[in-house]
Length: 436
Ligand SMILES: NC(=O)c1ccc[n+]([C@@H]2O[C@H](COP(=O)([O-])OP(=O)(O)OC[C@H]3O[C@@H](n4cnc5c(N)ncnc54)[C@H](OP(=O)(O)O)[C@@H]3O)[C@@H](O)[C@H]2O)c1
Image 1 (tube, rainbow, N blue to C red):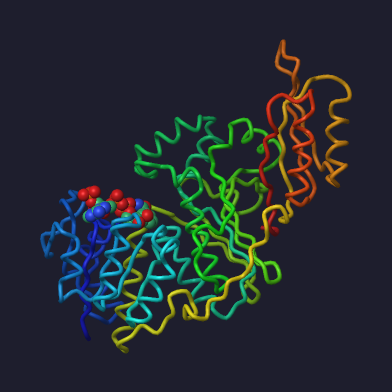
Image 2: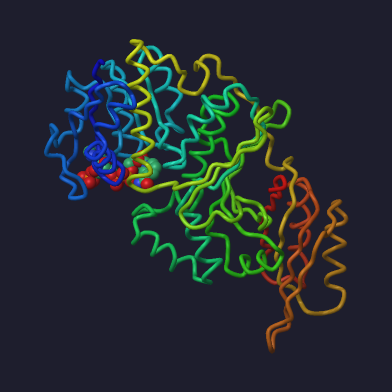
């Protein structure tokens, strides 16, 4: 049995979880990876009362962990992309393996860091960076390695799912649920990336890179947040038999890719439509295995730390037999990753939910269906709510057939010139997936 010494940088939600798992399960960890995996050094600007670090070397300067000659693996758990990038770069250059939970760092700087790690012959692992406790990185990189993956889709931001679930089931406002999500520690103090879809987009490009063997590109996905979804849309969706989820979708179509993050209506009988609260779920479609769905906690101290520890134990096992981790970080060596063109947004076909407020008079619906039909768009379903007392307007919801996004854009521009329309047209995508 050899020994692998670990240094953790950052003692917040995830860092304290890793310390707690090591404190509780040190014997089990050693036994299961047949290696003396030792937590040696913790870098933290201050103590965290959620965990006991009295058995470890503690430094207030996190870079002391990188400089510690006894540390073999640096675990980056500070978040962000500035200091974290320096820290990981310095660790790799010092010949240390790195484990991180930082999706922003991997999505934005993964290509350079992976290439650096390959040159230095050290491992860079990030299971916790996508969907917290769900082991999707290892599944895509290793368990499904013999498959050609055609698509990955998932609920990959727990905060967004919590907000949409509470709005749909309890009829609460967006602002009210967001405040609770922050109080419960689900949302970041600055929740911008959770709300505007950036966090989900970072995770999606990591999944797409593993699934399709493409380089990381943080800006590749068409990204929409959840702040455009209203309680009214959630009500209508329910009435039509759908649940609204914030999905990341990566699909391969021929030699091109469709990468999107947006609120999506999903038929309520699909498994993923019933994944509520802070849970995450990821569907993978691949040629040999068919469809698999992984569900579980997408965030939180111990679930996320569980993935970090899984990475550490993997390294412990591998490095017991070899000086180098032979598993390529993204499934294939970085010089074999191949860029695939992205399908332009206007060429992506799909079914749409449209909500309009129009004058309550004969002929208006004929005008709207005429403008849709002129762009080759058929109405599959239409729901109209009676006008509120004293109001001259009604709300109409339309489900279209599958239509090219560019054609819908044009039809909506036409509809928005109608004097009978009040405000603008609200639109959300609909995805049916396969039978559950
Ligand atoms: N929380 C989750 O459920 C979750 C799930 C999946 C992935 N992640 C990822 O895991 C990473 C850590 O997240 P977290 O939730 O544990 O964050 P957190 O609770 O905010 O903890 C961050 C820790 O890093 C320290 N830190 C931050 N910037 C630093 C700097 N410049 N120098 C030194 N120390 C610094 C903080 O120290 P101070 O307390 O002194 O500020 C704190 O100890 C992030 O990349 C996040 O995206 C988190």
